[in-house]
Length: 222
Image (cartoon, rainbow, N blue to C red; front, top):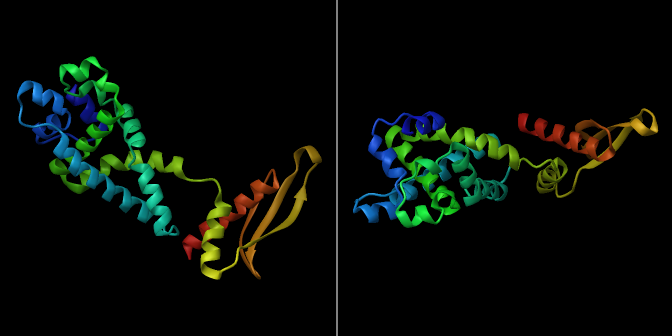
């Protein structure tokens, strides 16, 4: 079973004792009289996860300010996110639990699952360094960040333009085409006489969002 989880996370442990420790709940350690359980690794993994997440958000979102980056980071390292990761990689069956936790559904308890994921991140970090931890977490972050990407590009563009110029951008309808039941819209977003972006859509709202997205992409390239 160890091999299957290592394959799933993409890391082969050179120090298998770290892997075992990451999967050992304190209830099992206390029951068996063992010295080690995963709480210390959980502490370490929490910090490693925060660093990896902050690093990736900083690189991937050059236009976002500290406030929004902080909100995105908080969502990505939250217990619900960690619990989803734990279930996706199937960590539950690998856990070493005491008989009491086993009998009361500990393998599905969100707190135990989330803590075990953090411990696993800490173990990978100690075993393979930051690069190994980053590699394991990066794929999870890719999926979760995609879910956080808001479709409301207009709001994001307005925040940026208003912050820079103390006024919002304007949206201008360029043209509409097609019959009433199948219209398409072309929209331009601008600030003063400067065109920021253009967009096309099946509704005015969709076209404005597309124009705002185009403007954001152009701002990133500047």
